Amino acid sequence: MSKRTTSAAWVSGIVNMLESQGLDVRALFDELGMDMSALSRAEARFPTEKVSLLWQLAAARSGNPFIALTPPRMAQLAGFEVLGYAMASCPTLLAGLERLARYLRVVSEAASASLEQDGDECRLVFELFGGERAVPPQRFEFDMLTFLAFCRWVTGDEVHPRRVELAQPAPLVLQPYIDAFQCPLEFDAPAYTVRFASADLVRPLPTSNPLLAEVHERLLGERLDQLGNTQISHRARELIAKKLPEGEPKREEIASTLCMSERTLQRRLQDEGTSFHQLLDSTRRELAQQYLQRRHVSLSEAAYLLGFSDQSIFHRACKRWFDSSPGQIRNRANVDLPVRTAFT
Image (cartoon, rainbow, N blue to C red):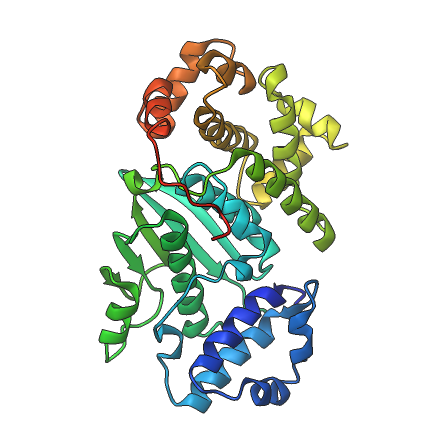
């Protein structure tokens, strides 16, 4: 059995959903040799193989292959652990998705998400690792729909993707999928992907709170440390963020602080699907969104905090990242929004 695990908080969300369908989940846990009492322990985690087996057994016992699509579906903030609160306190949904991609391991070491720009779209690609077992489609469906429900909750809006792509054969009955996802669907896709219009992701979140965002960022780092084997990209990003006000950090400087050679750092980052340049750029981009939301931080100060030697370079970077100037982004951020806390 693999060492990849999923948090008890996320498994609790699955249990609640299955129980709402009338299933005797305790009997399913007993049949699979899973300890249901562990759900009450915040630090508990379940092997990825067991989570897949739970979905397979639930579909078999219910006789309903569409069980993961069954409405109603409520966004369960607790299932995301501190990551959910961190996403909610971000300035935009895009920043929240970037945080999801970076810290998803807190929720599940068996899951990964990558965020990619594709023209006027932004696509979020999900991957689940089943260890010694294939991942059943119900597990993907539940995860993607729970994520979409969270997006709608945190934005206070009916956010609909442009398209959802499912890497599974088209079913004979399509209506349950149409009802659940409420957007165009593509089956037999290369990967499980949610495509958003980029413009839908850059609107300010009504739950945004820069101070809470910083607190949650620290907590997420601590949770990763508790899990052990913290990714080099996470540690490198933290160092980049700390050193940016001193000017653009160099790869050799970060490598030295991490007690490794440049070549080793480059190889480790490549193994994690990134590079030093990508890490530097994405760190600046996320921090830029936060600074431009803060009215007391001038545009020149924001450029300085991001390590840019000239404000014109910051201006060009914003045009590349957001297709808007820093001033335009600041003006949009200053539009009055309905007050809603991250916890209601």
